[in-house]
Image 1 (cartoon, rainbow, N blue to C red):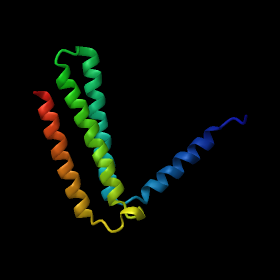
Image 2: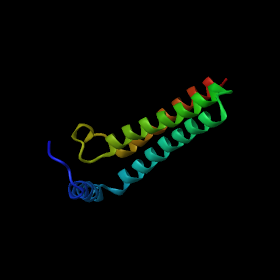
Image 3: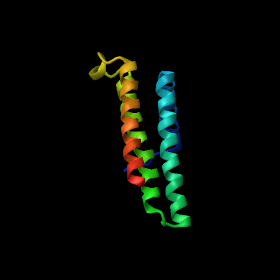
Length: 115
């Protein structure tokens, strides 16, 4: 097996960075939103590990809310991406309206789960 050198890793990171530089701004904003939602879920899991699991329904509701929102945002990103030929006839406004409606339903279910 050949060893990978540090220059190969730097070349890979540079190519990924330059390819992501061509991404439209609206997709980058959605990416930041997804990262924020996942980090919020991670903070909740770490907090639960430190403090304890007493109101377990609250913990589950918070984590599922963050993960569900991240999944819906990824779906929004797929639909809004201009390079995706599958959703070329779908208007970005319609995709955002679907995202908002699905988030509303998700959070109504989450609030119902809290009791």
